[in-house]
Amino acid sequence: MEQRISLITLGVTDLARARAFYERLGWRGQEVEQTVFFQAGGIAVVLWARESLAADAGVEDRGAGGVTGIALAHNVRERDEVDQVLGAAAAAGAVVTQPARETSYGGYAGYFTDPDGHLWEVAWNPGFPLAADGSITVPDFGAA
Image 1 (cartoon, rainbow, N blue to C red):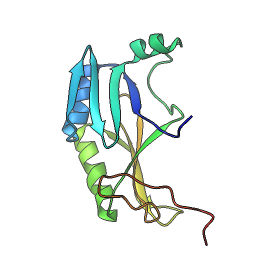
Image 2 (image 1 turned 180 degrees about the vertical axis):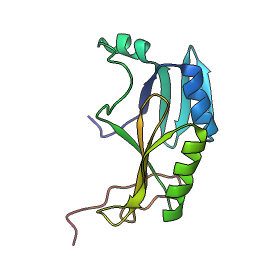
Image 3 (image 1 turned 45 degrees about the vertical axis):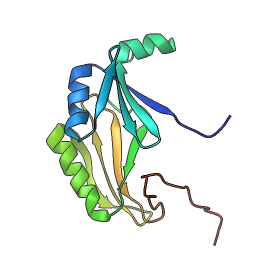
């Protein structure tokens, strides 16, 4: 299996509300058959009804809220951008769960949740510089 993520699908309780939230962040999506697709660099973030996602995956919908065991990350190019993105997210309706602070790895990061409780980290990590297209390359941690 190749190491790749092509789509990240977020199960949402209200598609219109979720789409409006991401569009207030400046994202532009397109809706097809009650599913909203956002191009996010080389992958897509998809919004789909929680119950539809659960049924499609053959699992029980456990409801929204709390930590789901996954966090999405939005890395930025400059330290100051962390505060800007967290502010924009809060203005769009996000809940900032962890204000920006210095990190153990020498960076600066904070967290917010979208209206369905999906956890987003906003981070400036000097060890993971962004390419022009916004992609990161995991460094060789074994190199001295």
